[in-house]
Image 1 (cartoon, one colour):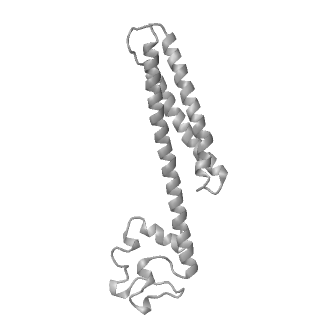
Image 2 (cartoon, one colour; image 1 turned 180 degrees about the vertical axis):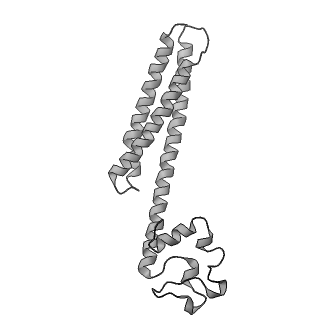
Image 3 (cartoon, helix red, strand yellow; image 1 turned 60 degrees about the vertical axis):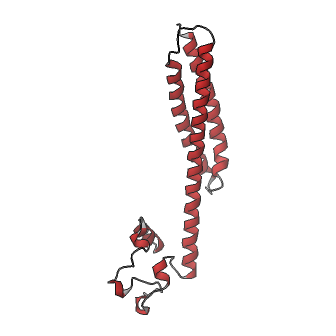
Length: 179
């Protein structure tokens, strides 16, 4: 078999990937602008995701073009490979959209948590369940925040924020000492 069908499949694959990658690159900033306040930041994130899509799908197109589907010189193997490329591009596009949706959701959750921390700071509470209702009145510190209860040996109760995953980082962030 000559190299013409391989080059044709490679050209078709590159055209499909570039067209879909440009759609992702141009439309994803609008999807991310809602959660990223800075449009430049959403463009940067979408550009990184688009580059990842292009690299993965161009590699896939090269692999599909190199697969031997028989000695038939007709259009059948070209059509079959084009179909495989279209299906794989659809899967890559779906995976990219899931990645963008996950990034958007994570950023939105971070903003909600930061807004809650800010609101609790303004109210004079620091947002930690065991600190809202101190067991002992003498456990309140000079700035009005509640500290660990004396009956727990100076430690917060089990199940409270410091004992959960990432709780220490949250405590430092709430107190203004971000690590």
